[in-house]
Length: 228
Image 1 (cartoon, one colour):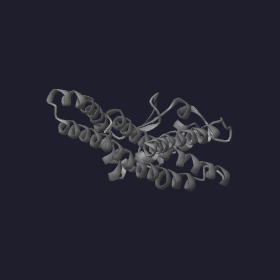
Image 2 (cartoon, one colour):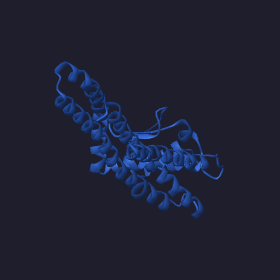
Image 3 (tube, rainbow, N blue to C red):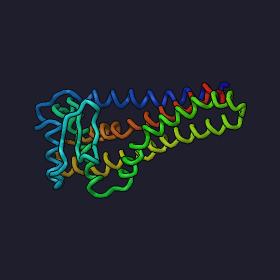
């Protein structure tokens, strides 16, 4: 019992602490600056044009900053689309990094995109299978069948954790192999700002650590509820 509590506490910590750190880092550098010549959206457009990715659009979204490989669109939140802050520009550079991955045929991005499309229906199916497990045991009086159903549900939810695990190298590649060299080569910021930019790029990538931990926590909750 104590071991289970400790594991749950670790998973909660892994899901909450990165989110808190990411939020703090981004908010710290989200104030408007007159020395930044353009907004995050304008910066994204500039870099895309420099990279000859003129067909990739830049749009505002309410669904969080992301790159859509199917629509070939960099989507930025209102604050980052219109803001002239270090966070806005660096996050825009990170999302452009994904567009650069897509243009170069970066395999892990394609694999993540495919898995992301499947994750929603896999999660719903897993929930359905695990919810039905106790009912099926009552109907069939077969604990073995219940065990098989629960294991199937755990495997399906585990595949979502796998998707988040695959996401981490994709995010770090976008931040440090794509966006960072662009920022350094263009000399957009001074040394002090580049140190902060690296922090923001790291924060942008680590958002998925929390997502992976939440998926693991979800599995742990199901196992605890079903007492498996």
